[in-house]
Length: 71
Image 1 (cartoon, one colour):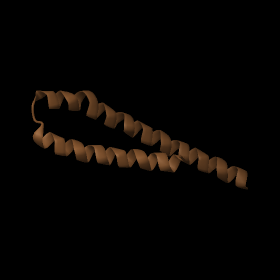
Image 2 (cartoon, rainbow, N blue to C red):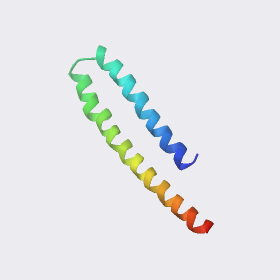
Image 3 (cartoon, one colour):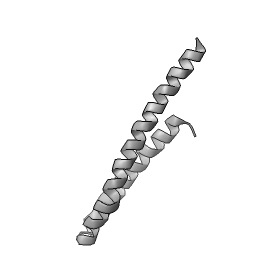
């Protein structure tokens, strides 16, 4: 899997997770659901955002390397 594919897969997975989590929150409304969101959902979103940024930077670097060796 290439950088672009990995980036796209992460973005789609986060969208899917958010969609399912929103559906779940409509029926799971107790304190445990709030704890779960704080302990797992929010940190996961932060980490996936970091991964997206890293993959974006890697992609830019690879494009730069590719163009430099192409010339």
